[in-house]
Length: 254
Image 1 (cartoon, rainbow, N blue to C red):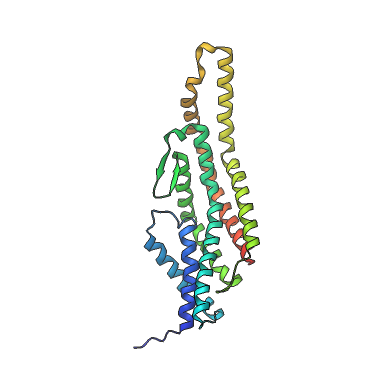
Image 2 (image 1 turned 120 degrees about the vertical axis):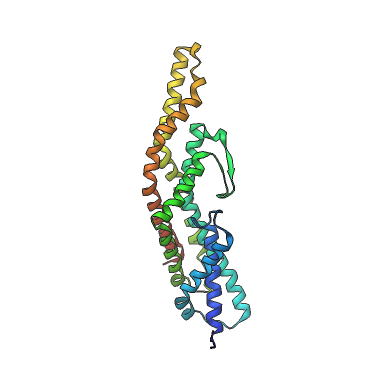
């Protein structure tokens, strides 16, 4: 039995695989370091084979120099799209970071080599919950669907509109800060009011040294009211998936 594989189809699959693999290595939830690099590379190749009927019909290969330039271009496109999705989903981790700072958990900061996170408990907890919710809600499938649609907007060998990408990254970064404040805002306000209350108590009765109870009280408040923030995470992750798809479509013009 002989298998006939055209050179154009093989080049198209390789180019699509470069875009897919670059995206998978940067964009969550696939960028989580607990997933072996070999598995992520196999996922990128498998996705490239899945979209081969679409990309092979729009690619005209044959020139080695053009193919090498197209490889570099697909690497840049996949990395740029993955970076955009990464920035969008940093919202959840940033919200946990705010809680760690105001709640006193930042004193127990540690480095998590699996998530490449240098933060405290809620920073890592929120990141792991976001990844779990992406898989549990099939949000990762929507992210991959948005990636496959970019091949219609930007065929193999095409290029991004860099002005659109720059505007999207700036807007995503600004919304990241605002969204993190909205997620962690209620708990941050509670912790701020606790500081105000302790300050007033110290002013009324200095001998009590109320600020000695600052860290234990904040930790207790975070543990008591932190559940309200966790209950909001499923809706937040769903909203972030939709936002990531909108940004990808806006950058690629799809």
